[in-house]
Length: 308
Image (cartoon, rainbow, N blue to C red; front, side):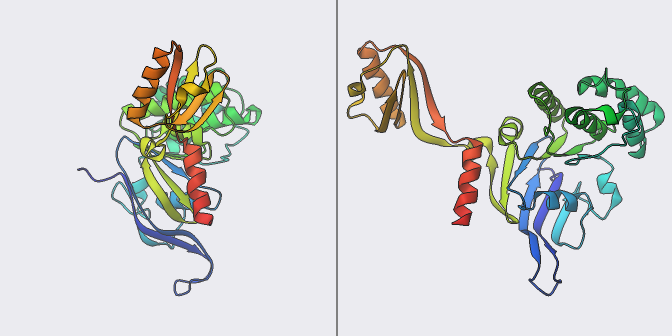
């Protein structure tokens, strides 16, 4: 296997106190994780979980930590680790007197691109984030969603191999969020590694391959979307007409019938038997949906369990 693009081992960061004292606030507590090339990795957690601190450590913005952090196999203290990195911070601010096009030109050249390279890439980037028509307006005139989209474009202008996105869809309307998801899917297909820190759990569920859930500086759980949103055993039936609850007698548990729907606990064998019974009774089944935990339910359950 190739070396991971992002690697963190036993990472601990304390604010306040001293190296020899446990006093102060522990933002990260022995965190270990790896992110491979071409994956979309989500970092979730309540406020104060340590998410932003981890990103800042990887980008060389926070020092004085214990353990190991590597980006492209290099420590954050090595400037070469950041040459191939794009970053969209939360609540970022672009110079209001510049136009969107000028922002992309300046940030691209600050990232090591030539003027010719930037000018060749800017039209496509503006179209990609839906900002072509507003490109020559000043940033001060932009809405929050427009600022977010031009911020994403600046993070991509030097064609990074790793992209850190902190709340990338914050303040963006539903159409804009869909567009950002499409951009992320395209970047992933081209081998870009994307590290997303967000509070919008549905967005993370739609975009990410793997997720880490953190709280109080520790990892509570890591896994794929499928692993973090398992089936609950509940099955929801939808019918063309109301059904007699007696048809479910002796089937499963926790039956709840309401209007044109019924929900109950069934295993795989019981699902088949239940469908056979309903069809034999002439019931028209319009849908059968195994109930899964949502990412939000999984997230809240883990955090609340830790507080108990």
